[in-house]
Length: 341
Image (cartoon, rainbow, N blue to C red):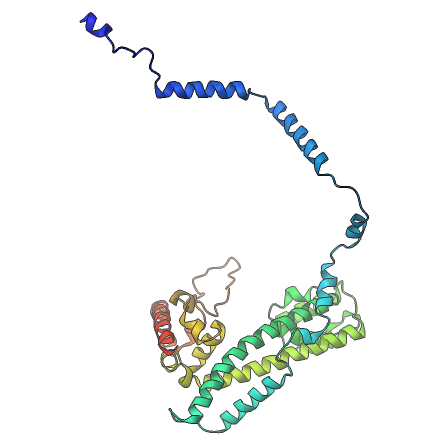
């Protein structure tokens, strides 16, 4: 038995196991890269950094002084970029927009055409084109509103945080302008802002840090604000026309949610084709506004959804079933939009 235990295959003593290879590799690595303390490693890194900085140093030139003088002025760049109002708008005052509005008024004057007629095809083309123009008008309105906010901020910088809605901000600016002495009580804001907001704006205007605007800047600001209101009026006219002709463009979607809600959904999505590509979960939240509870209970906030809650199916449903009704109608709207597209 002892002889059996001591016997081993020939050459077994000279074989190297896999774990022995790891040991040898680790020893070689320790010989090539000796262990350094944290201080030695930090000093070595500083030496390498100093050497690299010395190699990358370029000969000094006079361009450095020029670059230092040309610091980027964000406010100046925004003002110069928005100096020409015509560069912010493409449709405002254009002949194409005027001709399109004239055709819409002509179409509204006549009765709703019968299907498969020449007037029916003309109305269909007008509705499709109006839907595209509505989106462009929204973009131009946003650009002009941004200019108004930037131009009026030197006069009343606190107003931008007090009024979030763009149209309310523009209407307020048209009323306030250069308020003499910051006394906003001389300006009648009734019908533009709620009474609570009017009180806050009036008190803040007396302690504002802004300065009066030059007459030239004020005139340009007034022109931009008036253009915003005119573009918004044109956009609402186009939306009314789309709503009256929704049974031509999207008949299935109109039957489910009604012409008004269908027109709003198409305007928010950017067209019928874009609406047909959206999933039901996104259709449900189109037009939803953020609800701030201010630490209070959220039980009475209702169903969290967008404009789809205004459709008759959801409005006429019991409160406990409105959430399910919104999901069901959103899914059906997605299918109907894909059929109409």
